[in-house]
Length: 450
Image (tube, rainbow, N blue to C red; front, side, top):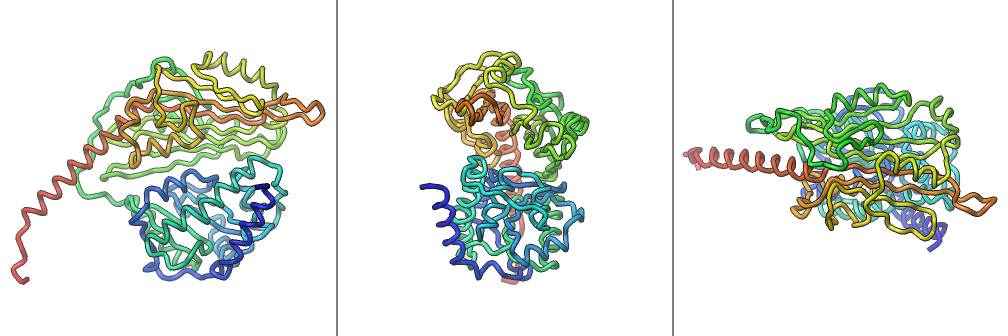
C-alpha cells in the first residue's frame, strides 16, 4: 500500500476516536497498573523512536501539538528539572501532526520537539523519506494496536489513547495514565521517583563480582563503538561521553533492585547546533549503553549506536567499508543485498547458529536489548556469542543514479554470555529472597479474632 494511502487510512481511524483526546486527567486513583502484559508494554515503549530530556527515572509521553491539554502540560513543565527523564513522542491526528510525528521520530532530537510545540518549525512531507516512514509506522503500530490492546486487558475504559497519554515503571510495575491536570501529573512524577528510591524487602545484594569481570569475549575483546568497550564501568562511560568534542547530551538511567541502586543504561545524543553545523547539517548521533544488573558487577554488556552522517561526512561506500574492516577486521558473515541500498556485516567471537539476537544475519537495531533484558531473556540465549553487527545505508545520487555515498550506519556490540550470566545471578537472588519471605510469613501466628 502506498504511504499516502496508509497515512490517510490512519488519520481516518484516529479521527473516529478524536473526542477522547480532549480529556483532563482524573485523580491518582485513575492510574492503571499493567498487571497483564506489563513487560511486553515496556519492551514496546523502549523500542520506539522517542526524543529524550532530563535525568532520572523514565516516563514515556505521547502528545500532539494541536492538543490543548498537551500544550497546557508543556507550559507548566517546560524548562523545569523535576528529576525525571521524559521520553517524548508525537501522535498523528491530522496531516500536520502526522508530519510532526514522522519528523520527531526520525530525528529523535528534543530540540525538534520544543520547536514543534512552540510553532517555530514546520515538519516536511515524509512520503518519500524511508527513515521517517519507518519511525511513523512504528509509532502508529504501537499506538493503535499493540499498546491499546494491553491497556484494554488491564481495564482501560477507552478504546485507545487519551492525550497526553503516558506510562512509567514504579517498583518494577508498569503504570499508565492519560489526560492532564497539573496535580495529577505531579502525583505521578512523585510516585515514579519514590518507587525507584524505595528498597524492596530483603537484604541488600552483595556483588559476586568484586573484581572487574572478564568478558567471555575473545576476538572482539578490544572492539570500540563510539569510544565505549565491553566491560567498562558507568563512571568510565560517562567520562568518555562528557569529554567528547561532539558535546553529547548525556542521560543516565538509575535503577534499583532489591535495595541495590545501579546504573541501568547511559545514553548520549548529538545536541550542539554548532557541532551539527560543522558536520554539514543533517547529522545525528545517538548511543545507548546497557549495563549488567546486580549481583553481577555493573559493567557494559551492550552498546548501540545510530548515526546519520552530515553532508561533510558522507563518503563513498567502498571507503567506509575499508575503514570498517581496518578497525574491526573482516566480518565473519556478510548477508547479501542486491539492491545496493544496505550493507550488513556480522562479527562473532566464536561460531554459533544462535538466533536469539534477532536474525541469523544480524539483529534489527534494538532487538538485543529486548531479548536480553533481565525480565524477558530466554534460556536459549545461553549459547549466543559475543557479537557485533553493523548496517550501513547507501544514498543514491540523483545525477548518476548510483548509490555512491553512505548516509547512515547502525552498530551493535553485545556480550550475550555475560548478559545471560548476570540475569541468572539476579534471578537466583530474587528467588532466594522470595523463599525467605515466604518462610517468614509461614511462621506468623494466626489472628485470634477471626
